[in-house]
Image (cartoon, rainbow, N blue to C red):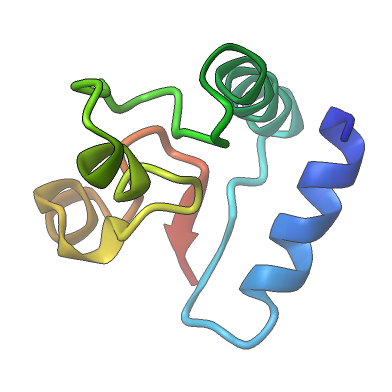
Length: 88
């Protein structure tokens, strides 16, 4: 998968939600590159903004898109940790 393909998947993901993709295309591409680099290195599409601890169970919680709505950044800033998703 390439960055553009992943960004299209995220675009479909946000269609029926209360959040959107960040409008900064360069930022979104950077996050996509990080996710795909993690997939190449670790075998999972892990969020690049979150640190893995090496346990499979914990790492599965970090697959992008992670459960960002439970994080303080979502409540305080209206976006996920890496700024990929923002409140509409």
